[in-house]
Image (cartoon, rainbow, N blue to C red; front, top):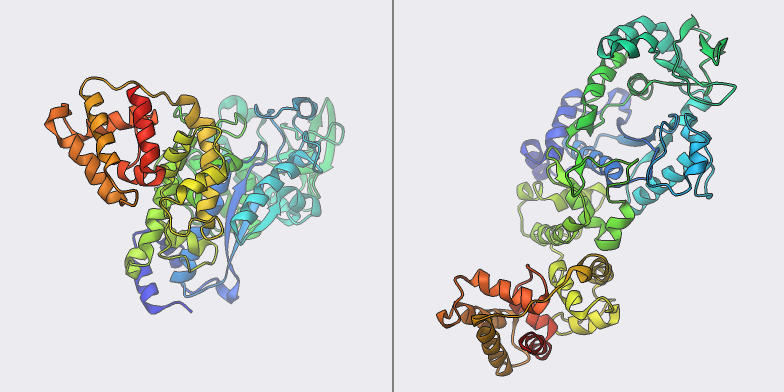
Length: 530
């Protein structure tokens, strides 16, 4: 049952999952007729190793799914993660080491190409397994469906006959969208050669729609062949429309690069007697150079890379935000995503329900069927933790970091703070790979020397149990003293970051000193002054 206050707030919430769900609610106010579940679908092309762009569709679709369940009072739903693994491999991804296996099998369906990594039944099975492993780790409720299984088992046969029966209508939709050269040889159906095993891009004539028989040329020979039972693959846009019709898909989102495909596949769905799904078109992720992320180029972050340097929750948080705005996706954005996630999570318990629905963490918890966790907090920000690890150096250990956390965190034990302990591990990795190689402390100059010496004197006279706020006030007073010549506090803090930490940016110095310890901070100052 859905709480009345929650339902009322959801009906007017401006959070994008509820805005999407309200469009679907107009379609099915009380769920599908007969009690059938409303079907949400996400698509995945396993021609390259999964990256975060392939995962985000499942998360965002799940958020809309949960929002619809709230608005509909708990109507049943399903989520299908569909792998388009019947596609022919058109090019070898740049980030595959054992390329020879794939080069020798170009144009064959992805599930009929050996796994270059040698651990799965096929190349597609390998990539599918990687995607599913992460979806399972995140706790998604989904059903995995393989295109090859659907074609090979005959479950798409009825829909394939429908394509042949509506051949001219589909051609009338597609031909105006193609260049003349492409239109001259275009066919909605791609037969699979019984000679080479390749997916053929050749003109096709319908011989018998009810029997599923077509005619085409295969290496100079005229062939009549069934398209049923895994002996063909549809062109992408036709395949999408056929799938929407065959499965009865009600909601599917996609990236901006598929805007034209959505329009044309929707027309094909109607030609086949189906109803196009609702959906959202989102902006694409970009790499740190502003280029579109590509599985074949391998220029985006992999799921494992994000989890090496950040948390699962921070990944979900970053994906939730502003789906219709293009965003960079590289390692540099991870620390901020971690800290912002925990800032929103801490606020959740104090917010009234209408504000909770605008909090990304509320949606992320609901995605996995969770309702707890509200009001949790992280005793040390990830940014501060990274500063500590950076000062300790690339050779720092987990135990060493925890020994310093004892200065700042009550009951500083990994068992008592499991979330923080995970971040200690990722902070060590992030420092090793990104921070340590770029750190360079500079010498203080002019009034900076006097200011650092004054800070050292103040710290020498300060109790070891001084709070972070007391230490921050002490640092402030020195920076505001005109004797040292700082035009603003910002210049003073920049001096501290560059001379003590080796970076142009840094934490609240009071918090850092409390964490690192007064004696250790004085050693940093001594090193800077000498």
